Length: 247
Image (tube, rainbow, N blue to C red; front, side, top):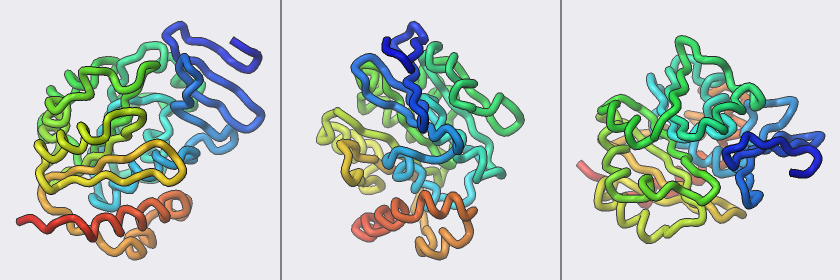
């Protein structure tokens, strides 16, 4: 470790600068970046793209998250979607130990974090989530048992009848993931490249969402959320126009 870094003993560590706190794994890949004076601001582009899924389900009652990390998406949803309950699974006790460091709210009536395997956690929650966000990475990338077609089937099973999921895909075989998404969700899926990054964000859904126009939706969300999600929602809307209509 170098000055400004603190290890958890699990491969996750915190890097501190005057501006940011960063959650990193061995190999120096930044998993989460937190602005010190705005802890619920989305600093990394792919997190904004994933949360564009809220445009496809504008009034979620229950949001599920697989992979807490530094809690960027959890904090954003907790602040800007007060009507939603947020349930999270995190498999790494060392990451969970950094919860207070990254100023993630304590468990309450709206927020629950469970230490455990994401696949098992989803299996126990059929039909539960209106929006499901999957961002499960360790020092080696996506854990192997979460990088299978069966895992996507578990995700689909955990969605409500009109539920939507978004998954972060980084340093992985995109062809395989696209194939698995298609096998599990049919035409109800798309991949959205992340501008200027190596990530793509996969979206998939049950039912047939009928989202409002991006501008109409953005006018209804809190101003700080609008500033952060506007560009991502408009990019998703352009991609959405190319999705086949299904009955």
